[in-house]
Image: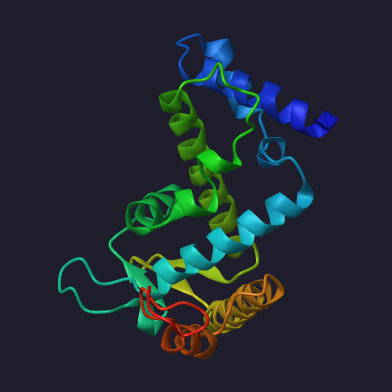
Amino acid sequence: MTARSAGVINILHEVVVALTSKDPARRYQLGQVSLEDYFRSEEDQDEVFAAIHRKVVGVLLNATCPDTGMSTGSQNYIRGMDGTVSSLVNYVMQNIRGLNGVFGHRHMPKQSVYMSRHEWDRVIARVHHQIVSAILVTMREDLNLWYMTGDGDWMFSNLIRIEYDRSRREARQAWRDERSFHGRPSKQGRRRAKQNRMAPGVSIGGHTS
């Protein structure tokens, strides 16, 4: 186990203690834990952030008007929230899907067996919320996301849509490359193997048993 992995285990344990504590000092300590502290390597962190970023943008692009149900994300805006980033974070968290597949129990250090599944759930939910919040704050700082006070809408730039399409293409290509690397048979190869499969009771020499 690397020193960073050991550090992650200690950090996660402290987070769980703080989450379940009513001590203000413990709660303050929880706020000092950075997102980097949850990951065993920069590669893990970059991979998780990229995947969740795609999901966050997917929520924005598929947003609908709460009153009419009509699509607003297709027109680069979201309606029905105030101008705080926290309200937008809450909206995304309510509509995003599949976060546990990106960062969940399988990403937790196996050495921390003393923590219950419920405790892990709380840690994982906190990490999800922190990452989504960090992504939206970065979008706003980069001027790709802004609030129109007069209209009461969150607007996002078309660059977000362009980068989203590019990122999805790259992710799909990486998935195909990984499958090719592991030598998964093609559909045609599996179909041919099925057609050539011997019938039950037929030996290699062609004599029935």
